[in-house]
Image (cartoon, rainbow, N blue to C red):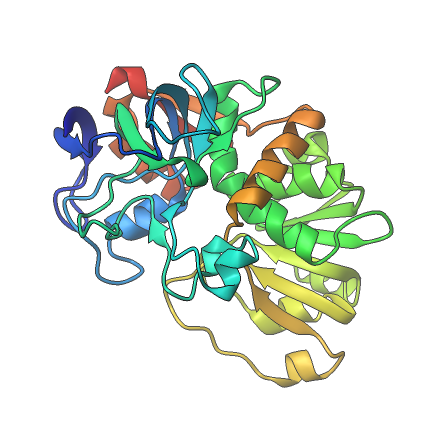
Length: 346
């Protein structure tokens, strides 16, 4: 066991505090990573505050991890000391089910193992990236291309793949009209990726406050959803709407913006159930769908795609003692667009 410094939530809704945790010894197929940067995802806040149900405490959040390999197990073939690597939302899965064999470990029917707030195959709780080091099986580690600096790469491990996977699955590309609903940590990556895929991109945001940013990041159009005229003007416009919003929405109103056979895909996960009149999907053969991160191979594909197109996340780097303040700022959308912890400050 190795003792490392970390920031943990001691109990639901409690502020994070500095502590120490134990990391397992490096096993045959493990990689020890010196964490350099860890992104703050809205998911961290949902789980730290038990918004998505009962959680495991103490909790060390963080599933947007970028760092450098400092040790490898005797059986490791994919990485060596000094490699630039990342870890996203998963650190293990059953590896035997249909989903795992298809490279879709995020949908593992045996239950994947989350990077934090999960129980590993050793029966111990997993602790995430708000820490100095992490030990991960090489099959759940990805390579960060040299063209991406580690700080802007960290949020790609969740925000990047969470938007890339559905945009690819629902064929965003030339000739397709794609709307990104919400212009935050996920949404800003959705705009960049949809634009790089060749789609015509519209941002749907509550206000026009971030319009200049949206257009700069690759959006062709930008509309405020607080303006009723938006829904009249854009009725039947989109092939795909990607909702990154984790607050309850009027789904009927947004489904009305889809073309026939269009899809409204949710990657934001509201804590409350939704109400829906099914005629919203019946009329127009529309799809209301969801998507969850991506598999390991697709995460690597996404990192290579971002490097090839020359972009990472838009970030604000903070020190570890600013995490609690950052959580409050995320909740008021006061970040452009992802907080990243410099883990040297832990």
